[in-house]
Length: 212
Ligand code: GDP
Ligand code: MG
Image 1 (cartoon, rainbow, N blue to C red):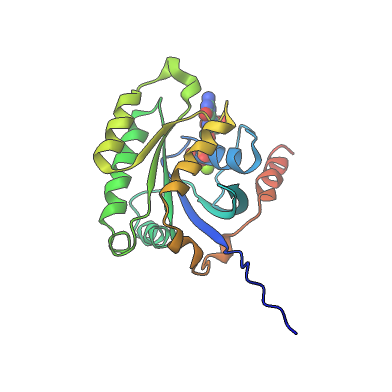
Image 2 (tube, rainbow, N blue to C red):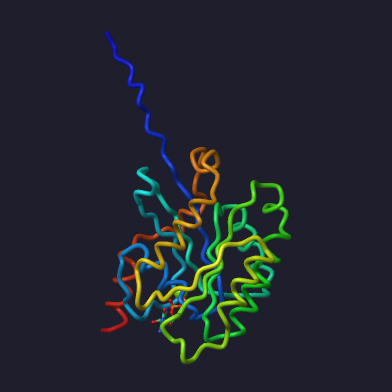
């Protein structure tokens, strides 16, 4: 007699988009989360990385979309809308040494919140991340400013150093997952961006090529 397996394990999957201006540490943060390592230089790779973690005792796959910053072009705007449509959560990164990057994060929050896809969906959580905390002597954005922006916009806020610390980076993603709705994460729609899916090894392959 056929025995039914009643302990069906539900697959949890979250699409996360990392945004922010150039050189704030988006790739450093992503690579730190996935490999626990800081490799220094990352190039301008557009990638979606897939990686599984155990979060609160459950296996969870993160698809993390890391892309170079670009603003203003209409083709970029349509890509931006695709990201908003795809995302279950956002990591918006600025550098604590770069005020313009902080202003951009503030603008990005408004842009994300004003898109139709964001408004019609369950609101995907947004985390504001002030990176490069190790460069405190060059700080131009106060922690309080980040905290206040988060308070005013209903976002989470963390200051981290991708260069120095794995755990602070991990906290960012845990914070995000805690705010995501389970129902949304189990009924995953298919990835429609296979063309730019690359494996983690792409980062290291690129580095090797660069250093030749
Ligand atoms: P992206 O353009 O936002 O992807 O930025 P990258 O991840 O490529 O980082 C840009 C530069 O900042 C690189 O030289 C990194 O080594 C450096 N960087 C990234 N995160 C940190 C950090 O936490 N502290 C310091 N001191 N440098 C960092
Ligand atoms: Mg990058």
